[in-house]
Each structure stands twice: as C-alpha cells, then as structure tokens.
Length: 458
Image 1: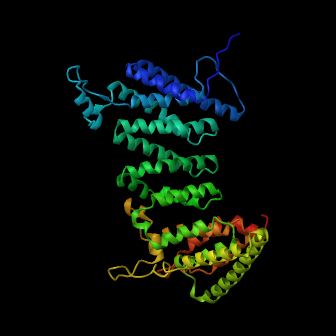
Image 2 (image 1 turned 90 degrees about the vertical axis):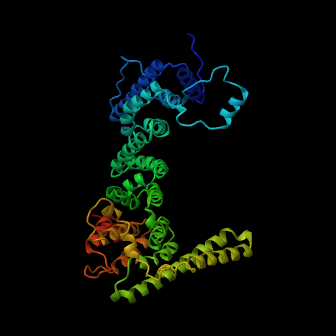
Image 3 (image 1 turned 180 degrees about the vertical axis):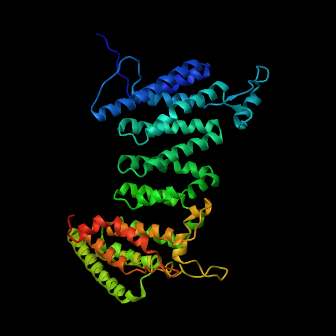
C-alpha cells in the first residue's frame, strides 16, 4: 500500500499561508469560507475530544470529516491574515503606470482612503469573530493542554489581528471580551489562573496602546485589583511574578512615582526570596508603610537588633561556606566580593531613603505612606462609589505583604513576620491607623501557615 511522504511540521504554516494568500488574491472567498467553517468544527471537536479524554470516555465520531488540531491552528490564522491584507481601490491603467508613478507609489505610503479591506474579506473577518471568538474564550483555561496552547499561540493573536483590521470599536470589544474571560478565571487555582494571567500579560501592551480610555476601565475595576491581590499573595511563584508584572504595567500614573509603592514593590520582591538575612533587611522598610504601636517601640527595637544579629550570623555562615567552596580562587576575590556586598548595602540605605518624606517643590508636605497606598483605591473615584474609608484599600495591599511573610516557606521568616505583625498600630480611632478587620483577615488567610509554624496539625 502506497503512502504519501510525511511533510515536516515547519512546512504546514508556510503551505497554509501560501494557499490562503492565493485564494484571497483570486477572490476565492467561498473556498476560504468553507475552510474557515471546517477549522471552526475542528477546534470544537478538539475541545470535545479533550474533555471526553480527560473524563474517561474517549468516544470518537467519524460521521463528519474533521481537520486535525495542528492543521486548524495553521490554517485559521492564515485565513484571517489573508483577509486582513488591504487592496487598492483604483488600479492604474497601462498608460498611467509610468516608472516615475510606480516609484512614487513605492516611496510614498498609501493613505487609508486608498487602501482598505475587500468587502467580502470584511464579511469573512466578522464571521470569523462570531465563530471562533466564543470557542477561543472557552479554551483559555481549557484542561486539554494541546488546545489551550494552540489557542494561546495561534487563535487569540489571529482574532486580535482581525479585530484591529475591522476598526477600533471592534478591537476594543474583542479586547474587553478576552480580558473579562481571563478575569473570571483568576479565582480558580491551578491551570486556569496560570493561563488567564499569561493571556493578560500578553494583552497588557495592547491595552496601553489603546489609550487612557481603555486603561481607565481597568483602573476603575475594583474586582480586578481584588483578584490581582489574591494572585500576588498566592503560593505559586509564577502567578506572583505575572501578577507583579501586571501591577507594574497597569498601575495608574498617579501612583507610579509614589515612594510608598516603590517600597511595597521592594518588599514583595524581597519576600519571594528565601535567605532570611536579605528578607529581614528589607522588612525594616515596613515601618514606612505600617507604623509600630508607640507602646511596643522598645520591643520592636529589640526584635530588630536580634534580627540584625541573626542576619549577620547567617551572612557569616554563608560567607564561610562560600569561601570554602571557592578556596582555590584566592583571598583577593573573597575580599572583593565582601566589599561589593558592603557597597550594595550602602546604596540601598543611601540618600534616596531619607528623601521619601521630604516636602515637594511647592513647600507642601508629601502624603503619608498610608495615604499613598489608599490613593490606589481609584475604584471608588472612577466608579462613583463612596470612598469614606480609604484605609481599607491600604490594608488590602498591606495584607498581601503580611500574608506573604506569615506563609513564607522559611520558618524563620514566618515567626519574624508574625512578631512584627503583632507590634503594629491597629487602633481604629487613630486617624492614621488601620482597621482591625483587615488585621483579622490577614491572620485568617495565614491561619494554616501559623498552625504549621507552631506545630499544630489540625
């Protein structure tokens, strides 16, 4: 029995692109429509087959011809790319095609009025969005790995390209639909949250490109910031990194240059490490965000000195182990590294730290750290909601840091985080203090970690 030779996988995208470009150039819109319809069926069958396989019922239906998943992922984006190619409205005749005019057309870019989509191509792109976008939204957090990866790498970028070709309103609608679908997956731990964050990271530059009108929709979405805080306080390191990227890129411009937010990002990044001496050195910055109760200032000073001693001993132990491992490199290299560490410490505690609470150029006192953290509660201002208790917003962001400290995988950091947590100012009657409800929330979220720290199994 004769069999056709198998083509390399790299050849399929090139073949699909050439085929779709040829059909589009020859006005083969009916053939492209049939291919698109077949691709949509193939993607739907792949999703159904993946769900059936995961559920344990792997029944296959051979009643309809269905393309393989890889072929659909190569063909569907090629169809949309071919339809997105503009064409000139007026084609010059032979007498008008002089070398000078041809050279001018090559040098001078064409205007949008002279170069637009074919009406049949525009109809096909609109149909593709109706057919493929619902399937793509359902496949973002799909448990079937091949379909989820194919949707992320091929289908979603092609749909965004088609939406951009159809105009700004269509692009805004498609972007909002994808963003809302990802937002609904963030509370689900596991692959759903990971996939949703990955799509949001890729979608962020497009949101920034669309201007403040679209960014204001994100800034005013309190549900997004609430679920982003859950990702930043979670146990998955990749989720925290992606969440930190979204926080840095989507933070309102009014909060970008605030010292309190730079301190918050420094603490969150330090708590992702494991070395206690580095974390204890960074936790000293917590006093700028969350003040210590005046009654416990002496205890706080004692704990800080103890943490400094343990940090120095840990540093010395690490230095001895490192010097033993690299004894062949000589004492000069070791001394150079010690001097480099000292220089880094001087830079961290350098002149930038004491300027954080200085008055601005107009002579007015800069806002306090709690006010800066509360200013990130832009949801109340943009959505027209009352913002009578802005410290709730500050507490929500501070709870992320306390939860990370009390759920840290290093028990030394857990104990130090709990002790530091209990020394803070919590009186609700103080104008610059935080509410006790937020404190109890942070302790409740870290309850499992605290029980493990103190040896309780239940």
